[in-house]
Length: 110
Image (cartoon, rainbow, N blue to C red; front, side):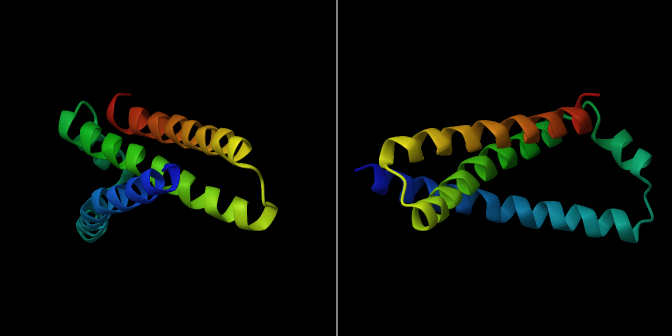
């Protein structure tokens, strides 16, 4: 049952990430072609609820998606038991959420 939930979680997060990645790449291309500096970009994103929610959702989806993918790799390489894999998956998810949340905070709130 756990493998079905992990499979679904990986696919759902991939569906969430696809448009967010395209949006992110589009914004990057726009910023580069427009000749915007880092400070100009931060000036536009600071205090923006839209960018905070957008990148916040991106971080959550990416954290879950990446942790599940790494879980599979770790299982194939090391053959760890289910319980230890669960703990490692949670730890990776929390680490990525923390790092990504800090980045979103820095871009939007500071």
